[in-house]
Image 1 (tube, one colour):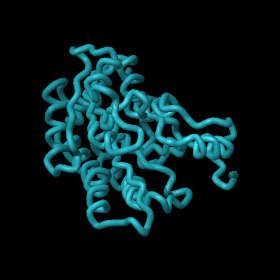
Image 2 (cartoon, one colour):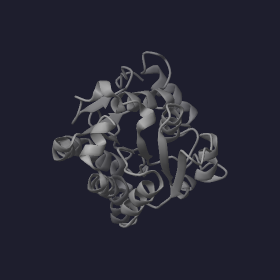
Image 3 (cartoon, helix red, strand yellow):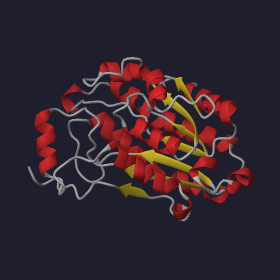
Length: 264
């Protein structure tokens, strides 16, 4: 089924330089009906900051078509937020057949700075919210209707913690590692209903968060001499949503462009 036949919920769409925005723009261009989620308050905590008008400006940058694109601002640290988000998406466009879980709480905490509060918050946003989103998605998914659209699709996001240490981001690495490990289990839970579940590790991606020194260092370790782009991550997601990927489930796609971590 072409993407234009799909109803898609994409989380973590709050900055025009982000991967979530690139995914949403790619799917909007392909004709999907989109419900996008953002939480600009988290971006405001980070060095990169949020876009001036938050999620609303992001939606406007996607074309602002009210018939096909809507959005919600939600704090996924709240236990009730995932179900409310899926409900809002379903009420806007009908059954959600495609779920792209792109949101994440970043957490630059090494071992010395760890706190119970930060660990709990990262767990709540990155893992608990993801599992509750998938649970609610599955509850509202109708396999018969889904087959007419080419089957259900769930795409999760991880990082490179399963390939190399991330000792400066322990809460983030722990929770992203959990999602990568859960992918096969969630795939098995949903495969009989015609839903695929896969996970994307987009590799070093230039979304404006790295300083000049880190950008140069990582760039030297990438054979192309540059970081991946959000559009390239979006292309991997688009591949997993298409008919040609109907047999791919339970996998982590490491789209790292040959990242040579041992080069400095």
